[in-house]
Image 1 (tube, rainbow, N blue to C red):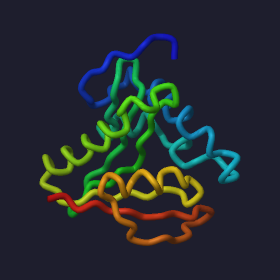
Image 2: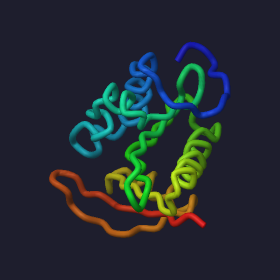
Image 3: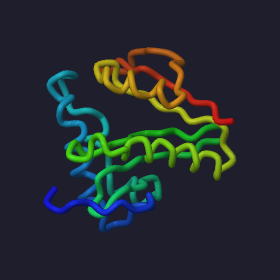
Length: 153
């Protein structure tokens, strides 16, 4: 990242953001490759398709963080949250998680769900601080995942 990002509202990503979405996701998840022995699933996502579907919301200009969400009948699924390592400690992740709650409420949904790879132990410390509770831990193919939910008031 060469420029200092300007703080701004979180916005829906457009086609011009696809490269930045990939770059931030890759930077955020790169450290986990060795730990889990493969590319983390968010690094393999079809970012262009997610953007085209209106599932990606970005923070910063240039982009320093993002969420990928998908609405279901009874919950909002938080598929990915990524913050560029250069932006850690600035509250970007907190703002993104608050945005997800707001988005769920705006869609009339009272629950947010997500999962994280069990080897991404840092996430397992963060999510409970934001009101997420563990629902289950299970193997899904080559991934050992911890599933969370947050009930919104």
